[in-house]
Image (tube, rainbow, N blue to C red; front, top):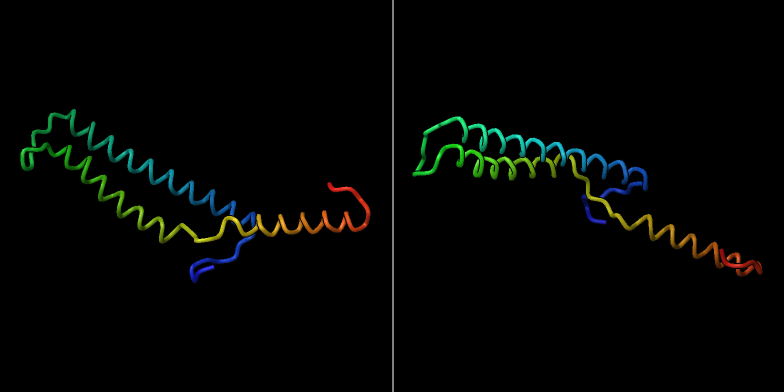
Length: 112
């Protein structure tokens, strides 16, 4: 594991994944609302403000959303996401199952 990784149990990893998914969906909803309000709301409102020949609603909906997406993604990754190994528990479980099967074979039992 690298410096930023921390050991977690399977249930802690599952809860962290759910937390990250929830934060990501909330952020997506914010971005979508921004796009709808600036793109459709300002575009249908008859706003005749132009910047370099392009309507203001286009600037806000496209380039504003791009800025929000970049900044928001950096904040979310730094604040809510945790670096952990997804395969670590699986390897330990496989080893324990294999060793249990070996023990059963040594005792004359059949494989499970």
